[in-house]
Length: 109
Image (tube, rainbow, N blue to C red):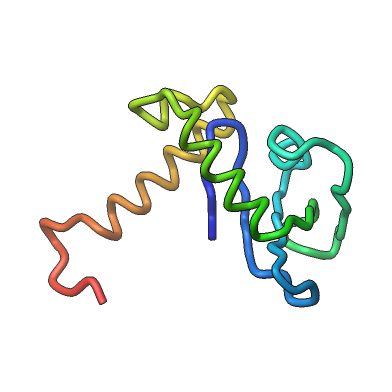
């Protein structure tokens, strides 16, 4: 799962070695530390997402619920503070727009 949040982009997957745990991954350390703090972040510089954080699934569910409860923006792109991240989000938005423009699509699946 890719999560584009106001202060970071996270890739979250089921942890392959730890039961009931997700692996939160990022290309930028601060994208994890902003939401989960610095303690527990580890690095695998051979991976495409080198910064990693293990989180129990229940904790991840709580994080998502809290994020939604505290969300105040009515336009995600305007909530992004970093100009570099805002540019990346706009490029992703453009790719999704082009790929899924329902005026042009015949089959979604």
